[in-house]
Image (tube, rainbow, N blue to C red; front, side, top):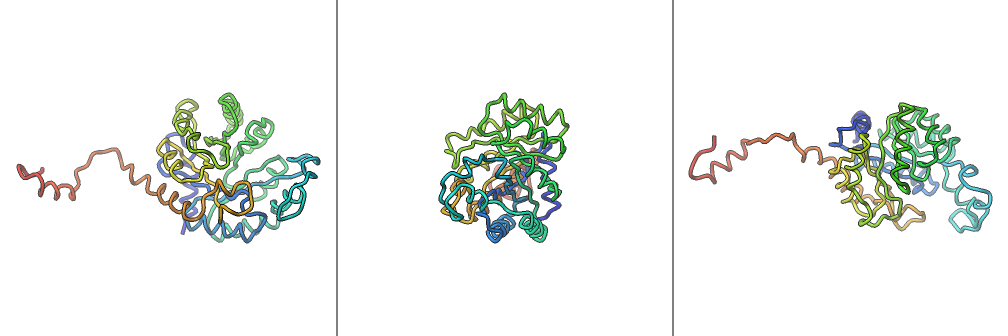
Length: 299
């Protein structure tokens, strides 16, 4: 069973510039629950089983995020024939989030959500979440960034769909507000072609900006996230799904149970594999040396 205290420790260390040995892992449920609390709970169970540190959702006030023209446009979905019906169908109510909050506490796992507008950010404050997350789509919205940074809560910000000058502005806003920041290197294509991931940016950003850098992946495989950890990522975020073939725009860029288990178990071994940077000559090696070095006895 996952330890909340251990997850809280990883979360804190994810915001320390020199730490990356045991990445904080966020299982991004997003809207892959398709508006079903039952499916959300199954995804939470999947994350708990894999030893993830947290699950994350998305929260929108659809009348703020979308125009009436878009909401009234035709769009077939499991909820109806318009975009409005689809967007409403994907949002959880306050009572449903209370149920999710209770379930995560019962399952001993942290949770949060990325707000897409200030009204949703205010809504999420009621749950006293352990961290904030700003999606790439919102990360060039300066008034929104200011609004989030004013909370001074641990905040992850994804950096897809932007240039380095945009990243400079993000950093300045959070520094001016004295808000702890960890940037996620992100490629906002769903799923992302592996040749476009440019993982060396993780190391470059750590050196250039002197702040913690994580990785939010949208590719179909697990290897890039493991490589991201070797590049210094202090937190990893990956979308998860019960089935990639399910309805939804993020399903194909998500990990199913087996992939999630493989990835997190590999990351949990990472710290032990790195060792302590000191050369040792163990008793086991000495026994082997005694057998193989016939010309002398090992000291």
